[in-house]
Amino acid sequence: MLLSLTLSLALAQSTTHLTIAPWSGKAPATTTAAAAKYRLTIVGAPNAALTLKASRLARGWLAAFCTPKVCAPMQVDVRLPASGRTSYAFELIREDESAPAHSGASIESSDGASIAIAP
Image (tube, rainbow, N blue to C red):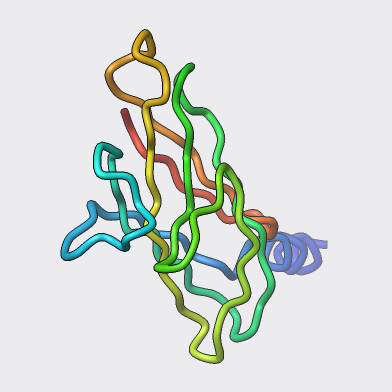
């Protein structure tokens, strides 16, 4: 019984890992100058297809997942390359002048991985 419970828990855990760090270096041209920028790194199974969704933002804020070509608001479909690792510029954009000065966010993947950003 214990073995089957342990095996079930192991199978239920995500093999994807999300990490977030402050952005460094040149920002992609698609990003917004006034946004709070982070480097979101996704590591998982090679060629895995995932959906990443942002949630728990403060009122008046928007999240964007950005590549050098496009920014996707609030969610993005990701196909990991053969290396199993990719990065996005993740932005928190204050859209409303009456919104709180800072916002945190949560990022969840379709396979259960998640990470939070404190405000």
